[in-house]
Image 1: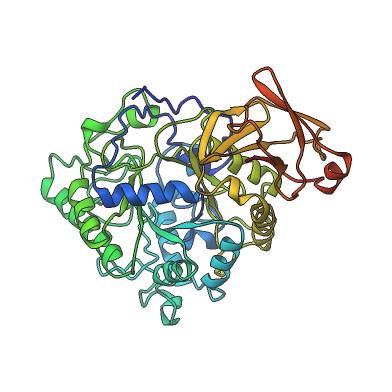
Image 2: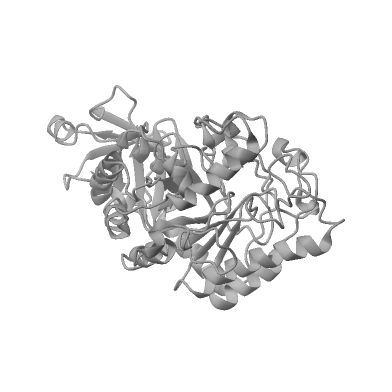
Length: 479
């Protein structure tokens, strides 16, 4: 396999917490195709469904701040502390962790999310069961720092085990479901050991010097993941974040954030993956940024590769500017979101779009509106996405290409100022059938076309141009 460098990416880097988790500079020539037949089968299924939902949700939504990162004692823009306790890290950490006692999302209604996501054309969902701060959005028996603790007012709600409720609601709508889980845990004393104050995002002691403490942390992580793999119904994807928790042998010194990892932080992924698949046969394991057998697909973050990639991959992107809830979010237009999806699929990827619930347990209404608009496009054009394979030349100028068997799809991505299709379209591909019928999805009218050089020239009648005006992407079907 050729060396694949995800550092060659388009400029889709967004503000705030997005930068905190940049995981795109890796060299993925070390991608390892799974050998397990059930994993291969599920990976193929996942590659066919194209479009998913990610949700970052935790106590941090009460403050409307970046998820977890304000606890991190690093001098980075995404770690800035604000508020009355911001002047003292110890006081701030105490106040942050005290949010557990007031977090009460009484408007929590995962069925509304699942219904809206399904109508938008999403087919899989990843939920943050635990972020780096260590707060569990599930009923872990390993810690009391969880939404179901008696310290948390929501614990008395019959739906307090929100992970179980969310996974169930989405499974009921036919979704593949996955559990986001942070490998680092800044709340547990076997990771940030109080004897040494933390200097950065990494473990606060040398695991080689204190192997018993590290074993305690590794077992803690294993036990929590085991809970998720055994007590929450069918799980399709284990999506692990916090790539600095990794064996030293996997650190890539050419990647800036990996150069700062001071210790080997090996939590025995073989043991974790083996347990996961014993309980969830075919489980996809996504050990983000740690190339090898436990990264079943790669996950460029807040970025879209600028070229087709032959390995399984997914761009995780925010619908707004932030991963976590902020009171006034700047949501991307539906037109842009649709174009991003088309771009990604033509390059052999999936799009995982993040929406953040607020402290009351509800999304911004604008998020529902965006999903509804995407869904209107998907209803007409979904056949050019689901179950398709990328078609060379994949992306060329304003064109994106996919195919399903002998049927080809050429998607035209208009510029900001284009509201109607050009009267003449020049496609840089030739139909596989000499007497192919060309139509635009949304219309049954056959279009006149002729071969010109290495492509075809297609005439679009004025009436059809007006009828289909204002779409985010137009798809020419060649069958």
